[in-house]
Image (cartoon, rainbow, N blue to C red):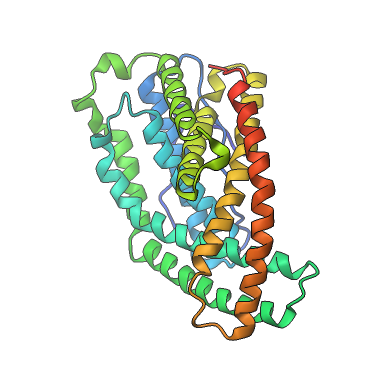
Length: 321
């Protein structure tokens, strides 16, 4: 990962031209110096997220590698999380226009990612001792067709939706700083460390509120907890450079483990939703779905046990802020 240093500008003029050597780009480490101001830190963190979005756009448009979709979607989520982390200084209404410019692409990417994950899960089932080989092939074709259609929609949202223009407008927005008309200069020019501490404390409190009785949470509530944990993790990564590395790393690792478990539980829930309408499938395809649901139910029970243990460890962990 390439560090993003306060004051740098990694968001280039976006281009959808294909590069033969392009590879999916993961989130960059954000290098905030201890004396960074709130405004400088805000710009740096937001730019890092937008740079990840821009860096993966060409791959989404031209490559069959589904990791481009995943990493571009991560960039979108980190962008949204960065605005939430700094909401105490840059209010929600000051970011509305820039969020709207990326909304359609973010939604299309979400749908494509769901079909990608389901396709990968079916492929993984094919590498095991699956008793319904013919039925699995029929299901795989069904999912591939829908995944291909979702990719077309995502590419259209990125291309005709003028993502490049939206990213350029976001960069101009960051440079001009229209939030200065509603945020006192003393707040924007103050050190970012106190704001970081308050933001992390707030996000942790919201995550804990969502995680009560975690072992019996219904699917919707568990998804909301996943969102809260993700926001807390991203905020920890945004502000990690302000704190001792060893302490931040230990805490973030616990968040990552919990996020992975919640993510797999979400994948199971998404599979049930996407495979809920089986009328278009032949009978052999429906048999494969029934078998996959049985496997998922067993896996879900094990994951819920792991989730409870991971949640207890996270609650007992020392905060680094």
